[in-house]
Length: 321
Image 1 (cartoon, rainbow, N blue to C red):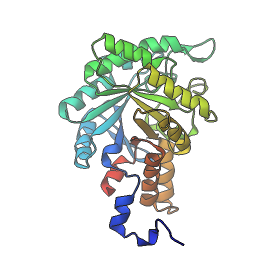
Image 2: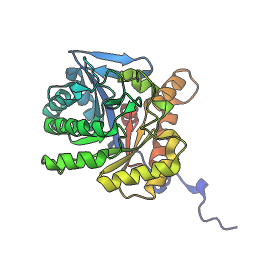
Image 3: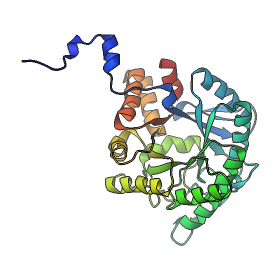
Image 4: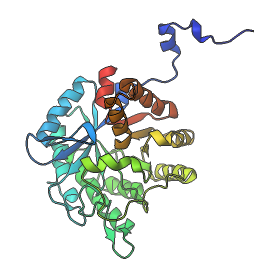
């Protein structure tokens, strides 16, 4: 019987020509965690190869990234002093604002994204101002200070803002605030479908953002809800988001595909700390072919429909590519 496509006829060159999806260095955004001091580089036990860095070390790290072909980073700040409203995040002299200015001055060719949230800056570890009656985040009060935080990032020279708190109406609030202050061209990457996931555990070690009470399930997505996940992303698109994101990535490839089929916006997949740690520790234990599984995982994000991958693996992937 005639067979239209015989795989055994494909040599390596032809396989490359007919391959449907590719992983490229340009697909990646690399996360960086910034804290105070000089010469500080602290490895996180739960995330081998991931560090908290002082600003001077972060600037040198970006030299290494550029040699590897990586030109996009996302910054997370870890302040010395935390309070109930995350005041450091609202200060032009705060950790994240200083990091943005230093990085753009040293490496104007780097594309710098800022994570906009309060969990790293508050003493309670939640993503905004607490409603003590209901023991959850006060959505509208948090929107107000989020708009202030966005202007701090914009004035520092950031290239894109990524609000991660999952507050209702956050994209519209930021878009109106940025536009009103003259930052109409500053793009927003929405954490549009962010699940209340168990995969975030190691991140809370590196960002020092574990909630002091409860969890974030009241304002993050229920992992069981597919239709709501799609609706959340489409709502952020309607409010003015420039890029949509699914977080975590590996357990939610179906959601990436669902959104890809409904939106023409670029989609980012956040390959989160728990996914990274599982591969790193399994590889160290000799349970998997680490590099092969890592690359297969990256390819799965592209195959599902992601255009951008935020990943702690980015340096290793760049080395392989």
